[in-house]
Each structure stands twice: as C-alpha cells, then as structure tokens.
Image 1 (cartoon, rainbow, N blue to C red):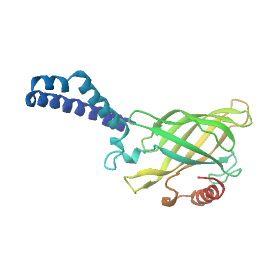
Image 2 (cartoon, rainbow, N blue to C red):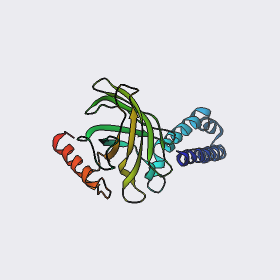
Image 3 (tube, rainbow, N blue to C red):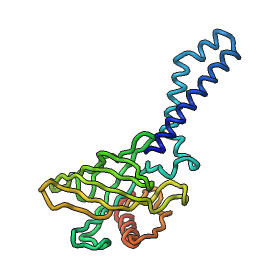
Length: 224
C-alpha cells in the first residue's frame, strides 16, 4: 500500500496548498463581507473534506494513476484443494465456489465476510498489496461442519483489463490454513475472477483449463 499512501499524502498536501491560494484569491477579489463568509472555516473545511474523499476513493483509480492496483470489485472465488501428496496442479476434490467483495481505498483494503459452498463465513483479517502488485492476506473461515480455521493466501494478477495498466480481473495463487487440531491442515490454489468481466478473461497459465471449466460450471449452475 506504500505507493497509494504516498499518493494520498502528496495529494492532500497539494489540496491544502490549493485551498490556501483559493482563500487568498477570494479575499482579494470579493467584497469584505462575502469574502469572510466564503473563506470561513466551515466552507474551507467542507471543501477539504470533499477533496479528501475524492482522493481517497476515486481519483487514484484513474487509468493513468493507480488503476493497476485497484482490486475493489465483486469476485467469483474458486478454491482447489490439495493434500501433501498432490503435485502442483493435481486436486483432491471438485472446486468449491463462493463470492467475495473486496473493498479498497488509498489507506486500506479488506474482504467482506461472505458464505460459500462449504463454509458459513470467510473474511480477511489483515490484508495488503504485495510488491509484485498482487494481494496477500490472513483470513478466518468457519466451515459448515463446525471447523474453524485461520490461514494465509497470496494471489498474483494473471490478467488486467485493459492490458498492462488496467484493473485486475483475474487472480491466482496459493493458500494454506490450520484448524488447530480440529482437522488436518488444508492447502491448495485459489482463483479470483471479476464477476463483471467474465467475457474478457483470456487465460494463459497452467491453471487455464481448470479455470475455464470452473467458470463455465458456475455460469451454467448459478444465478448471476
């Protein structure tokens, strides 16, 4: 998040300077009584609050700024479970599905609590952007069989739209979690697909066939 935080701080400094120049201009340009009202603490404070909101939530998402780091979206999450005897792309069961909402601004990023095929609740605990431009987080999960677990997942960006500078629309990575003796540890691969961009996804990875089949299965069996 360092690049976004730096952008946020730099933009706030520029905004504060701009508001200062604006107040000086108004004092010089308008009659005294009107000037005092316009540059009063309430008006200037409101102007700063609005500017801060736009910087933190909107401006940084522009394509020529940090759209490549914008994970704020609704995602289809596909989980492929493995055990210790599996090779990298061999899985022990059919994939599990759930939806996730990532909320992000310049200062924070998190995954909202959500249910899934085999668990009642899943959400991030601590989350950050990685140096490679992906996401990583610790999470809590409560399975439908009563097992509670804590884990770690790291996802890299497989595809953006538009390419290179665009918003991430396809993520893939590894996860592992521990149930503190309630069951064996679980690990595997996870894929996040933007639910608004299924038609734009073109997959180039060793997971390509698994992802294509899973998206097709989801579209055939779930209501959008």
